[in-house]
Length: 252
Image (cartoon, rainbow, N blue to C red):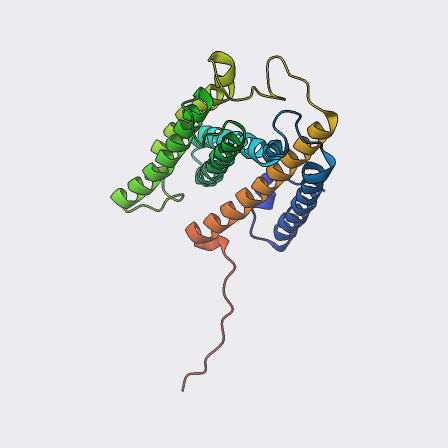
């Protein structure tokens, strides 16, 4: 049985069943990650129980990167082929990425308060992450402003999709800056544990819990992406929606 992202956003019973299966898998992974991160993995020797925020903070940041990569790829695909479906993927990816970046900032602030004793510090990683959030919030605001100015439908008109795609491609330049900021500049923030030039050691139980959390967050975000694109398809392309049942009416 062949499955692809395009199949899974189709407005059919088979595609809906596939999306439900993915949602159940995401729920199972989330439960496993909760047990592993909350109980099986040991607390950090220095940070204590506060370190368990890593199992929410780090996956949120990782999946935000992935969502912004979707914006990059979908925007590039739209610019090459002109298919508005790719523009809808870019919009959905930006929405998910912005929310997860906000989650990463909020959990990081809480973690910093528990470990550093401060909610905020002018740290390269923190500042660049906030800039990343503002950039993609600006991307979404641009889409809305262009739609209101031209009277076009956001996600269903080239007058919105074309400038948004250019901004979506350019915005991704901030992602490597955020990730490598702890390597390029002096930072209070802990260096990358897995995606780092020189990987620091990590307890295997912590590593398993972190990978489970990342897998759960990735699959959950993919489910949200697919459901969001399906909703945009239904709203912006009336032909994609199932025709409502019609009740015959006798006249005369």
